Image (cartoon, rainbow, N blue to C red; front, top):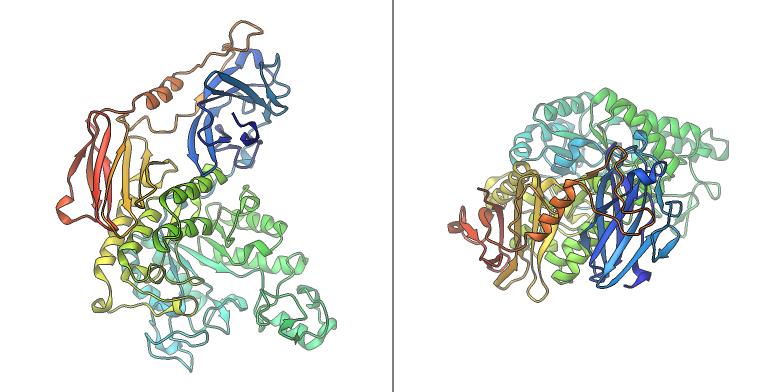
Amino acid sequence: MLLEAIYHRPKQNWAYAYDGKTLHIRLRTKKDDVAVVDAIVGDKYAWDQTITTVPMHIFTSDALFDYWETAVIPPFRRLRYAFRLTSGTESILFTEKGFELKLPDNPNTFFDFPYINPIDVFEPPAWVKDAVFYQIFPERFANGDPSLDPENVEPWGGEPTAKNFFGGDLQGVIDHLDHIAELGVNAVYFTPLFEATTNHKYDTQDYMKVDPHFGTNEKLKELVDACHARGIRVLLDAVFNHSGKTFPPFVDAQKNGQQSKYADWFHVREWPLQVIDGVPTYETFAFEPLMPKLNTEHPEVKKYLLDVARYWIEEIGIDGWRLDVANEVDHQFWREFRQTVKSVNSEAYILGEIWHDSMMWLQGDQFDAVMNYPFTNAVLDFFAYQKIDAGQFASAIGAQLAAYPQQITESAFNLLDSHDTPRLLTICEDNTEAMKLSSLFQLTYPGTPCIYYGDEVGINGGGDPGCRKCMVWDPSEQNLELLQFYTAAIGLRHSYSALRSADIRFVHVGEADGTIAYERRDGDQRLLIALNARGEAADLRFAVDAAPAAIGTKPHAIAFTGFAKAAAAEGSDTLQATAASTDAATAAVASKGGVSAWTTLLSGIDSATEDQTLTSNAAGELSISLPAYGYVILKQVTA
């Protein structure tokens, strides 16, 4: 065994409370290096009476490592634990102290999870796990009230630029809620709605007022109520990292300089406020003079912004916030922001815009989720750009799954394009079949998928401003076959909890032909998705186990209670596996092979394959033929 590859540390994504009673414990080893891992667990104050061995399983892998996991319910909410790793005849113990050959007499050197304090358990809003989001750029979605149009408004459907306007407004969204609901969307995320000078509104002028070109605060309340009546949640975009240049406190600072009572609301390097050689003398978003950075450590700034956060939830009834440039704001502000928001609505969703590793913001004291751009990049690199092969893609996904606790994976905001990126169809070089595969993986993957408005009807466009085209409402100009695909795929996600669970396992990775197949399980549901991400037909042949779907790939949390001693004779370093759930976990592994039957739920092969049943052979092998960019979603047939 390569000891240098073995890693664990308590807390964060390695040992965490999934709920008020269950701990998830993980360990990293070199890929394909270790055959068996057991966790030796017990209560530190009653070690001899509670010591128990529980099996671990590989829940994901990447290019370099295997990641092992087990779930344990401690009898008294606290746990001491070590790991026994076995490969062939070699066996070694891993404790907080390091590596040992013999089990110590006491657990003082073991890893320690001190206590599951309920207030520390990270629980994102339950509804998010079941949500399918739809992102709307309001200026380009629909013009429902021409009386609100800017003076320089252009005809709907024209070429977007960085500065032009087409008159999209809140009434336009209300008028088209049926489209959103029929698509299967149950949550909407709006880019900024507050008063600002630009068409994108990320240069806020008044945080307490809907932009007059969009409507009024009352109109937004009408929209929110109409969404709620359809079971649709509403997320607003908050720009708290910076304001706009017309934000009254900044106008005052420009006018009165260091004498302004708002001088300390901003980060000023040099007075007066000006731009020298393209660089403002005050901190901004990037080097954009229109967007001065706010001093969120200043008590008055903090109070103002927290009042904003409270108002729109309390008075308008929104269901959460998407936070722009969230990683450039101090952590303490976000901690107080969370307390403020959750005190008004404990089920409000707090989503941060962070493009990279986000563990520091996802420990239960700041955000519920972030925009999952590492996921975005992996999906696009494989399905759209075709820069990586299936093995590299599976490794990238494996690294993602290992990077965060399960509840973070379940609520991650998984997007493929947005107002900040080229359109998905354009990224796919206008290949709708490649676009479908990208979206199908997104919609069958753990987390919360988000569809960018218009993708479902075939809108294309390059980066900003090309990605901000007007929505196409004329059915004759829409790709109705693509719309039907999105509606069907979203419908399947709502119909099968397995597609919303965190249980995903690759069963086939075609290194040479760009094919993948993966299982999704939840309780008695077991689905299999096979995708061909390349332009040539491919035959897939791989093994699937015939285990009853109820067993699943992840063993149930193992509970041990009372003081039934599970160790062998005192002083022995040999421990006995206990609990009926251990047998179930073993059964799931031992049941490889055998016949299993699968029926088709959704297929991109041809219409004749719908409702077709496929059966594995006696060796447990399943054969599937996929055309170029073909796909199939199968459900296991149970007796």
